[in-house]
Length: 133
Image (tube, rainbow, N blue to C red; front, side, top):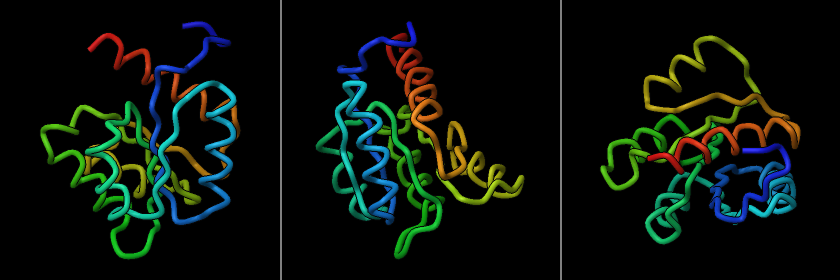
């Protein structure tokens, strides 16, 4: 997969209670051709996952009602969605947070604020894996 490859076949869900983070991710990813699905929290996301079948999910940890750890665990427990890579997003960069993310099934951990390059690198990495599945 080349650096400039168009990512038009990739559906990315961004789950974050921050409108700024959702919009930033949407702008970065749309410029590369990704199809974007946005969700404000875990409940909103769980309702949209079944309809949209994302290839990759970016999930904020600190959200009201259903936090990122709970949401990730629910996604991973469902056999229809357990194969989808979940990338945890957090403003914290602690070892405990990363370990807890792994325990609930996340594939990776990204610290906010993220750059366009960081986001696209992760999308390319997991889009490549999902193509081979």
